[in-house]
Structure formats: structure tokens, C-alpha cells
Length: 128
Image (tube, rainbow, N blue to C red; front, side):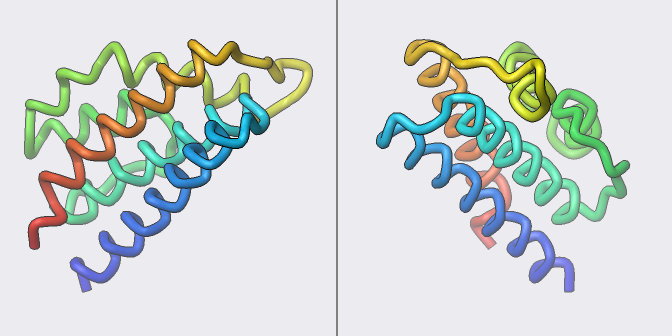
């Protein structure tokens, strides 16, 4: 059961990351791109926790989820700065009046962060 559930979270995370990549290529809405980057990383972190059978709160705080992941692998803490950047894009990308249009430089950075963290986590758990 464990393997099936964490794999489902990975699939959903990959879908969010692919959506962000498509939005980047097609010059889509930048707030939506940032939201999908956050969601992808959130789901990768939750997949990691599920894989290691670590219970977690129903939260969207990437840094809190990462600290939970560090119970099994402290190396993930190296992404503190990047995760805090992504956290900043969660609420402000979702609700008015805080909707923001980000520059190409900003969204490229956010997408790169999401891709790096996704790869890091996938390399840790997908080798099964």
C-alpha cells in the first residue's frame, strides 16, 4: 500500500511541474506558474514523507514539511532558502488582491528551484 500511495503523490507532483513548464514555454500566467511550482514541491515532499511512513499535517508550508522530511534525510535541509522563496509564492499567487505578475527572471528562478527539489526527492525515493 505504501508504494502505491507515494507513487500517486509523485504522479500528481510531476503533473504540477509539467504544467508549470508548459506555462513557462507558452508564456502563460506567471502567478499560476508559481502556484504550480509550489504545489509540485509540496507533493514531492509529501510523497517523501509517505514513503518513509512519517505522518504530516495537512499544511502547505514547504519549510515545515521539509523539517519533517529531515527526520529521515537531513540533506534536504540544504534547500532552506529555496523553499522559503517558494513558500512566498503560495498565497500571493492564489488570491486577490495579491495576484502578482512576475518577471521572466523571477519565474525562471522559481521553476528552476522546483525542478531541482523535485529531482532531489525523486532521486531519493523513485529508485524502488
